[in-house]
Image (tube, rainbow, N blue to C red):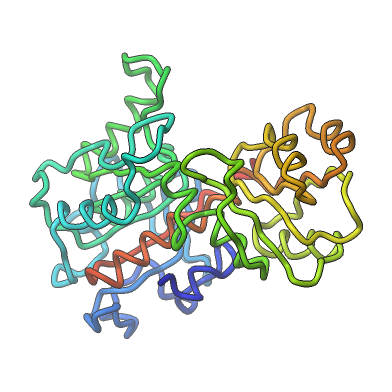
Length: 335
């Protein structure tokens, strides 16, 4: 089960001010297993790879490319650790990535120099494996970075351009493994982006067959229809900032399709299934007209913002099951 804290709004702190970026022995924080350095801290990257404590704005400077001095960086050397292969097996067993026809590889994308037997003390999660997030992970001595959007996509050039090479350079120099889970994480019933977002909006939900096979989206349902303005307030609280709204449906919403990321092309599918609206991340130019003409609402709350919950839930799962430290890096992408 996913903790209620994980299902809370994206970016909500699960540790007190001043705790992020410090060892549990200094702060008194116990990890899931009660060990001194377990648990989780919420951090965001500042563009130079430094980690900023969301509670105090205290900055831990980034180290030049690679891991800070000492294995594990700021984390304690006696922190709980787990075998990398065991963590990845647990994630694969949970998400069953082979059942999805995805846009890129799921699971391990960049191996650890010590292979499956590598010792993992610190797991960093982020939405995307961009340079900002990877440098922030290296600054806190991550052993494993876990993301929703990985490095490799179908149709991308086989040769490494300077951007891709720069991202890999950070991982390789720091001895950091990278794993990514895309559609399997969108559609999961316990840790999925869409299920968690529906729960955050106060709805019950069922898988939405119209979102693919297996389904990646859900249909959120309220027993009492929610007025549109109230629904928009709930979405704003859950995702931040206030979403774009393209009206066309009823004054109150009872059944809403939720497909995180870039699913504005599913407006017609939601209308065909008799739903009152579609909540996704990115709009398209034609979204406004399609919502009006199909008679439903289209709500676009940001690709990044609608996909923060799932990967954090995975990090929390690993912390709870294996005792590793989990740190969340929020790059605060407005798209």
